[in-house]
Image (cartoon, rainbow, N blue to C red; front, side, top):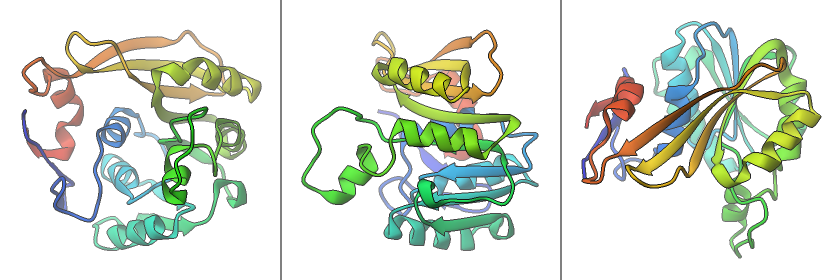
Amino acid sequence: MEKSTFRFKQFEVRQGKCAMKVNTDGVLLGAWCDVRDAERILDIGTGTGVIALMMAQKNVTAYIDAIDIDEGAYLQARDNFEISAWRERLNAHHLSLQEYGAREKYDVIISNPPYFIDDMKTGNDRRNVAKHTVALSYEELLYSTARLMTAGGKAFVVLPIFNLAVFQTIAREHALFITELTEVTAVEGKSPYLLLIQLEKTEKNILKSQLTIQDVSGNFSDAYKKLTREFYLKF
């Protein structure tokens, strides 16, 4: 399988050898979203801060708030922001989305939300918070997104393909509409398992596309390399 080294322009992160966790879902979402015109960006559930850092690299003027309910994640994100070249534009906050009140609305809201909305919960509280809707349901995520996003803003999320119907139904209840959708396939020839979604407050025809991450030999596809090359030292 092809190896890769994740990096930002000012520092690099080696997978499995650094405190900052880099997962494919987050990289895909951060690389895929369009934040060129945003002045203010909110990263919900920032974890170690990777997506927020990607936003700072992609948009050289935007101010970025990143929130996380987990204290350990918040502390790590804060530390990662401090050693970056964009520390003046990045702010980490330790609180839940439900508690978060912003003075101004955001042009872009981005989140990698909980995955398993109906699955059995584990016995580990931290895993429950990270992987289930114990702390943040789709209802709460989308309600807050509508509340915090500007009229012309965009929201970006990544979620499993099997959660699309319920997610889209809840989004429409809050006057949020899917305007762009990319189906992601892990390996060439397999069925899509993941969706990259753009939401707006105005309903439009949905722009659809597909992306395959790896070929059957385990090498990254040209499309994946093109999408993420700004954030990798090598493939």
